[in-house]
Amino acid sequence: MTFEFRAFEQAEDKKLVEFVNDFGEFEPNENDFESVCSEFNRSHYVLIQRAFQLSIISYSELGYLLLSHRQDGWRSDEIDTLISHCGLSRKRLAIILGRTVQSVKKQVFEFRLAGGGGDYHWSIKEKNTLKKLLGNQPFYSICEKLNRPAIDVKHMSVKMQLARSGVFNQFTGRLPKLNTKTNQIISLYA
Image (cartoon, rainbow, N blue to C red):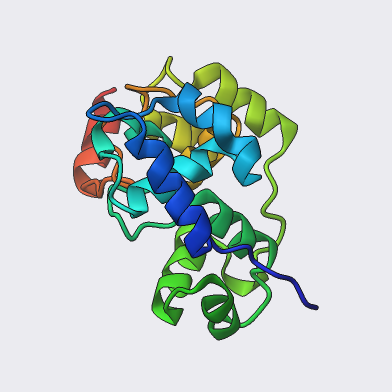
């Protein structure tokens, strides 16, 4: 099986830098990125994620569309490639994506793709539940109801264009570690 991952080329990075610099002291917003996504033939959220990787936009304004607060964090197009080709060796995926093998292994673990991934796809019911609950219930509660990792829920929210400011406050990409004894005691009195 052969496929090609479309990494950002230097010319695209330069064009993206020029686009952001045209705003002067202000940063472009989500709508500004949407207006140029056809020129790049990429989704606006992938352009935003790449702009953050290049340090040309800050986290504060568009952080709800980023999968990580780290500038070397993964983009949605990389995650999509990882998910659709998780059966390949981790080394081969790392080479194709331009990531380390350890980083690929970490994402495979985070998205629960180990062992070939099984059926990763989101069902219509899951997507509808996400649409209904996002912004109306605590984020981690939604993750528990969907039985999906937090990074997976955020990734799908971004792809479905449900992500908006304030929905992912305090999101780190992982569920908080809870003291199970304390939770068991609390559930006895609930």
